[in-house]
Length: 486
Ligand SMILES: NC(=O)C1=CN([C@@H]2O[C@H](COP(=O)(O)OP(=O)(O)OC[C@H]3O[C@@H](n4cnc5c(N)ncnc54)[C@H](O)[C@@H]3O)[C@@H](O)[C@H]2O)C=CC1
Ligand SMILES: O=C(O)/C=C/C=C(\O)C(=O)O
Picture 1 (spheres, helix red, strand yellow):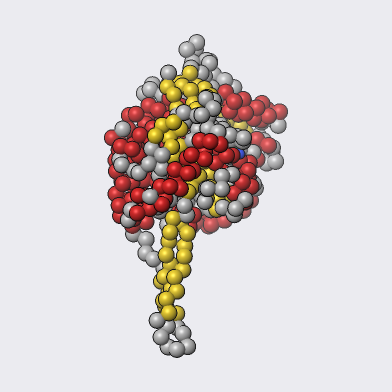
Picture 2 (picture 1 turned 90 degrees about the vertical axis):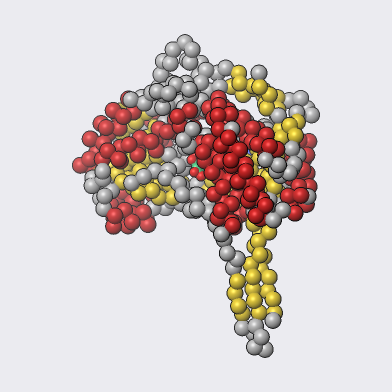
């Protein structure tokens, strides 16, 4: 049986308390291994190691040397692709066909993308006139923020953790990562890769555990942490913001969404159905960018619903290694209970269940897993809780609309503002509507098409700040202005 230890100062260490918790497979509830739960002692040690590394060899490296090391990390992840794939799919139950195209390649690419941005980013400079005619020059100088706490979720564990660790390290910071208690494996494995690549001890540290009154809270409350970056639920983001208020530490929050897709009658219907299917059901609907509200122009509505039902009926659940499977389980029984409570609520709120709505019979070998049916509803009111709250499961509500003005108002009628997708062949309309979306990311005729140089983050309750490309520099570095009088 596997044992997941903390990774502190370049070494795997057990918890002094001896406290562990079980990591179970969402596929069949079998025991994957035992995870050590960090107490304050381990969090203190990890933060101390990260602080020491800042002042030690890591702090002495040039930017070019750091970038070289991080490129090596990316290459090593690719060399150990199968190890990462196996670990990620065991923890999450997601199909290997998906993780091998999204999670693991992005896990490696995240270390390269930001290094390139950084290497090509110019320094700000302004010349200032002065009364003596000699002038002054202002030069922007960036330094690392210090020790960054990375609090990561379980839905795309390697991808979302490295999306933060890559830029943090490229900017010269050190990190202490707290992966989700549901998915300890790939973050633990990354420790091995860091050692194999010669990243100095203390630069990358990992502590395992839960949120409140456990590793997550101990880390975010720690006064040796200079800034906190988080992806996960909005309410957790609020708790982290409170912790960060003590000592005025910076935060970057990427939180939930209740993302709309808008399908105009002039769209390419096949592409719109294919894209909306992916956005609602990939990763069993556990993607913060995923679509849970679909608005379809009335002439197309019935046909669109029919096609979505047909496509959803063809989704094939199965074990990660099953090459024919394209639909995994939810992350846990606890999360399935939450999603199923929304399935019941939808019926109570008057939905027509077009397909799904329950738990599939997966057979004796898999029935103990956290399997759930892909579900489509129609007929709910705009103020139904199912239409307003983030469910984070494989489900969406489809509603007709009659005009552009109406659908813009409907799409924006949400507390969240992460992403939106617009399907139309009319590019003027696409731009007009995209500009009016209250969201951090808008896709036109696509979904989850990522260019890592672009800004990523949410409006309203979907987060604070932007990461990606040069935008990450604002969070991961301290900008100092040096004014030189001539
Ligand atoms: N990417 C996203 O937007 C994600 C959204 N979610 C949403 O969150 C819901 C709950 O899932 P969870 O995994 O429980 O999300 P969560 O937001 O509670 O957990 C995410 C991370 O934060 C940590 N954490 C929790 N409370 C904390 C605290 N007080 N201080 C510091 N760290 C803390 C967790 O241990 C985990 O590592 C899901 O049902 C879904 O709606 C979950 C995962 C990802
Ligand atoms: O592509 C990225 O960098 C981030 C994607 C984030 C999600 O899909 C998520 O948080 O669910």
